[in-house]
Image (cartoon, rainbow, N blue to C red; front, side):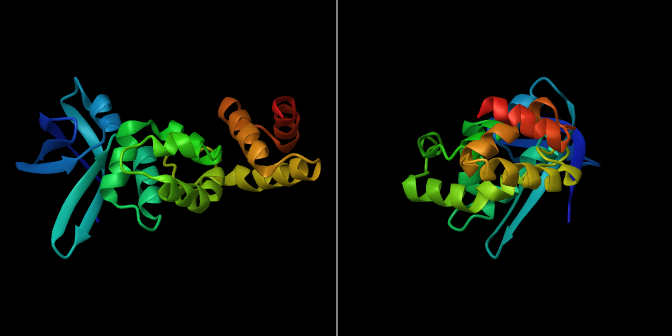
Length: 195
């Protein structure tokens, strides 16, 4: 399996790029996020998702592992294919997508071309808990593996205090964005200020 391709950009458009490596030109489908990151660069490293079906073989490329992991998480939802996932990543940033799912913002998700109410609801239903636990992130995880247990403990404590799980998740996410290495006590104190 190909993890990344490193080489020179031969052609760059908002939907695909051609990267040359060792005399071979790889045509790679990209999102607008990746397009923006690759503009004005010649030597690049593009993280690859190899899409293979009976009648189709494509490379989907991303400027970061984080974007690629979110793409893979999105296509794991039943009824959502690579084209829809690419459209999502072209319409919003990775953080905006995660925040919309965590905050259950159906209207924000529905604003993406090709996504209706049922698909938006399914995205939220299937991905919210995974994203809160750090799924769909690459190198810069929302919650690192070491903090997962702390996050779960903080969530349980705040829910027992009478706050809704949705609001608790939003508060904890915001706290950990500001202070990724926060301990349990700090997470609870700072989250209480936001609730």
